[in-house]
Amino acid sequence: MERTGRFLTLALSVAGVGVIVLLIAATGLGAIGRYLHVNGVTWSFELVGMLFLWTTAIGAVLAEIAGENVSIDGNSVTSSRGTVFRVYHNLILLLVAAAMVWSGFAMLGRTGFVPSPVMRIPSWTVHSTIIFMGLGLCVIAIARIVRLFR
Image (cartoon, rainbow, N blue to C red; front, side, top):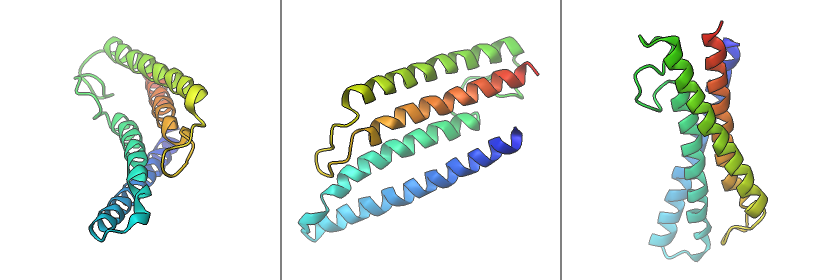
């Protein structure tokens, strides 16, 4: 289980770096296009908005894995706080993450296939960041709770 967790953390880190590289490239392309008065790169600003949301979602999951997402003394396994506090913390995380998943699916049901204004990409490419973040945080909370009762 621990090996799988490290692999998933590495995979998320690589994906996050890839998204940031694309974000920087799209921002640079948009800036150069604006500076040189090139009209064909207005789509890059829409792409930057989408990539920013994915950077945030991946970063939030990675920060929670590292125990750096919320500054509450006791959210790490090595905390001096008791098991009850750590279970409470992870139950709250699970509740918030489940609300994010529920909310994300509600958004997808209503506007998931509405195209974006410039690139005409379906909105689920953006809305799915909420579901991804919620599912990632749910998995982390459940794994921590299971680990506490082992």
